[in-house]
Amino acid sequence: MKTYINSTLVIIASLIMMSCGTSTKKTTPADLGWEMGAQAYTFRKFTFLQTIDKLQELGLHYVEAYPGQDIGGDMQGKMSYEMSSAYRQNILDYLRQHDVKLMAYGVITPDTKAQWDSLFVFAKEMGIQNITSEPKNDQMTYVSQLCDTYDIDVAIHNHPQPSHYWNPDTLLEAIKGQSSHIGSCADLGHWVRSGLDPLECVKKLSGHIKEIHIKDVAERSPQAVDTVWGTGVIDMKGILEELHRQHFKGLFSIEYESHPENNMPEIRKSLVYFDNVVAKLK
Image 1: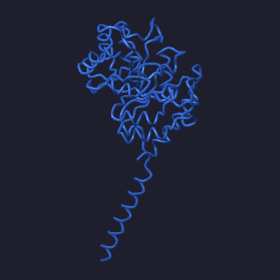
Image 2 (image 1 turned 90 degrees about the vertical axis):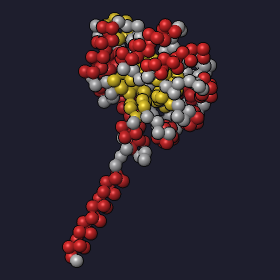
Image 3 (image 1 turned 135 degrees about the vertical axis):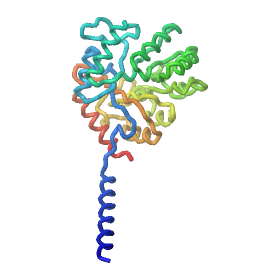
Image 4 (image 1 turned 60 degrees about the horizontal axis):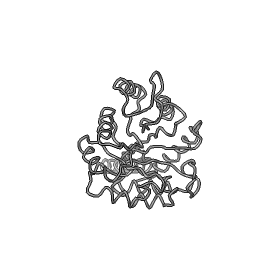
């Protein structure tokens, strides 16, 4: 009987310890399938290669390139999808050495089918998962076909009004009947600049969000400037909770446009805020 009682007490103690361990475990972005990176426009005062160095300083492993940035190093020219094969390989080597993956590319909207073809070939060669774009309505069917052919997503970006996709309703109408590879690149700050509530926009786009351009802004106005996450007017906590509810998985691309010469301290504070909110998501 004594042995039985002792064994029972051991089992109960073990269960209590397991329960306590589970309750104190903090959720991480990786637990949710969330990948934190940066839109290279955040570091537009620097070259693309310098941007990769900055991401390494921040401990980030994902980048979204934009076409207008100087490549840097010994390579002349911009991060154009028309760059040479040698440049493409050099960039891939540099990314690999710094443990950074090129996840997305844009915002870019080619004019012709031939240009779209070249863009998708570039994206495939570089391992890009999302092309961030604002396709014209008459391009959508062709872009949809390319998405399926190359198994690459097109994340439609919402520049502020009067741009075509400033309102989620327009995006949802445009992608009806198209490939499931086409969805939203949800730019939180631009929705505020268009007079919309980012949380309501995220809810409306449930199931269609491919990527987040994550930012907070200081005021509700078309001229709103970026600020440290959690200190502005965007309900960042509510948005992260909603994305968790939607089972969103994918890239959070930091696009911090304020103080481009030295925004690292603000980005670090923003990342601490993000991790603290995510830690409490269950």
